[in-house]
Amino acid sequence: MSQSIHIRRMKSEDTTWIHEGLAPHDVNKPLAYIEQCWKENEGEKRLTLVALRENEFAGWGHIVYSSHYPYFAENHIPEIQNLDVIPTLRKSGIGSMLMDALEAEAFARFDTVGIGFGLYDSYGTAQRLYIKRGYVPDGRGLMYDNLPAVPGSQVRVDDELTLYLTKSR
Image 1: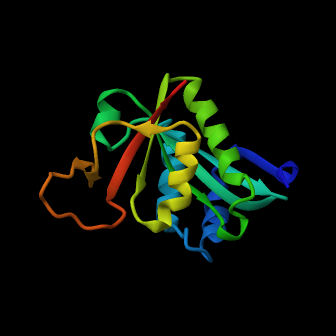
Image 2: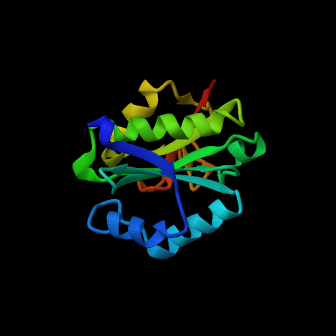
């Protein structure tokens, strides 16, 4: 199957195509978000790579050069974000191929790359993928909305409860 997979940089005309590719699945993103991603690509604040399987949208991933996570921003660590593979195509190597390409792009400019993930079961596949690829926790513990979760406090288990990891070349 990997021979029919192609990874390339996002183009301006991809915004609607990506939206339509994501829309029927649990990885749906608003068109305005996808358009904003393209603008950030044009401004070199983000790099978006898309995966195609037999010329059909299969997934995408991003490198954000200035993370909203303070530790990454302060230490000039780019962050891989929103690695999404169409659910029916998962476990076919597309996520790994996207990660290979994203890491190659990041390591061409930086010594370290970061990534964060949520802590409930929907993130299970991503959690295992990143650990297998050599990412390790950044040592700052759990974050909620990019701020440390304080011991003894209560936080909501949602997409804002994250653990951040790094990988160095």
